Image (cartoon, rainbow, N blue to C red):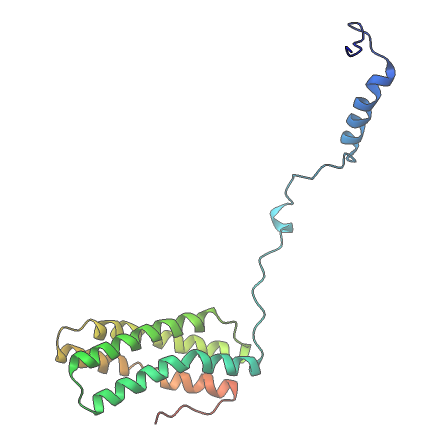
Length: 177
């Protein structure tokens, strides 16, 4: 059966009505479509930063962050005291450099409570200096170069700054064994 096709030019007001209604609704803003215009820049919400940790949360987070670095430092100290070969010590210095970099990144990425923000920032500044020396120690080509870089890194160990972080969080001061 062939479809019924009206003669050319034959339109009824009924056939035009849906098109007219759609046009009126669209012009009136009731078209039901998605608004594709972006709000002005001053109305866009800014990406929100994570809320700072509470002091209690920060205590645990700080201890978890610094534990691998402290352990690596203690192992290096033990190797030096035991008179281990310099290449062994250099490998331990590489571990210290790696854990130092990771610990700095984690300290930077954490939203610290207001009371700890300045001490953590100071610790990170000192840490940057030490990290350069730990990285050089990890690549040292001689025992003398290794010891020179270890001494330079130790001069920027961040102990005073770390004590201030611990004090701000109500933690006991760190004392290595």
